[in-house]
Image (tube, rainbow, N blue to C red):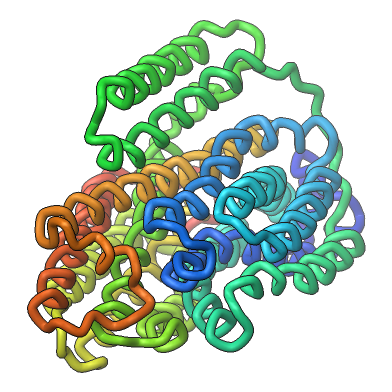
Length: 493
């Protein structure tokens, strides 16, 4: 592996990474894990934040959505900025912003201030994420890139389920503020390791598509704000106009990328590679699932079962354990098997587990009736996160590594933002249907609902809200059937 890496000048690997690129990968994984944990760590603390900051469910969903939105919108341009000014430098700058914003989040006393701090935190994350994927693509040779990207992808999958568990333990033991304070020592360690171990790679000159940035950012904001606030505002005319305007701007963005003769923000030639296109559909689905299903599950666990934040979060432990346990063997399979086999199995098993979970979601069920489906979902997820990341960029030329990483991560974040917005709408509408005039039950969440009939109706509302992630698993399953065998030599060896 090392000989192949050093013999490939196109990879841009300096002497620091030629002998062994794995230390650089592990240094990047620490920071990447931290920023992805913050996508889901708030879900289990939702009831506590609602009580402490006198907020609504929709307010606290915005604590997550604001982070996702600020993460998603700039990530296309930050991938290019890494190519221009150095991936290592931009990663370290983003890590600094993220860590300082985490301190700000923990010190806030109002939900509005918390949302604003989360926006800054998301901006820091958007600077970091494309650099991790681009650096890995450049320092590992094609024949071993699948294993490296599998570690990157497995980190994403593990972070999505570790976030709520860590959030529950910290919220119970130290207070919700510590779900943000914990980032400070981790951020310092991640900075020191990246400074010492990550190579400074050659840069490439780029012209920046600022019109593309403006169009994509405005489209994302209008769509997500309109979707999430729609039910709260009774789908008023101005909300519909926002959504329509966002859709129109998105179409304008795509057309501009098509006709921009200079250097578009999203080179549409990327999508000529079928595997890159399919991977983007798959990761959008997974982003939506990761951002959405935790909210109804955690509210059900605490409001219906009477679980503490830690107990509620531990319901997701089987999923986390299986995802982490299977990461290494799945990584090896990713370099040997057709991605359609690996990803098809993953999405199919995850869908079965999720439907089983929804079927059993009711008051009074035993813990094992949740744990078993969660374990099945975890098995499936292990065959999705890492192989999707490994397959996405495998066929792309190195000079498009930054653009490809930016698009891939932006797509995942778009899925996350839309998933969080849509689940807020579904929970609101289902609660309004089953418990009209009893919104306090849906918004408190931290205390167990004493009335068995109300608890049954609340469970039904949360259960029906979870059809959104189930649908996303089904869409992902159909999409990955269109994978083709990667082209690089060494695949299948």
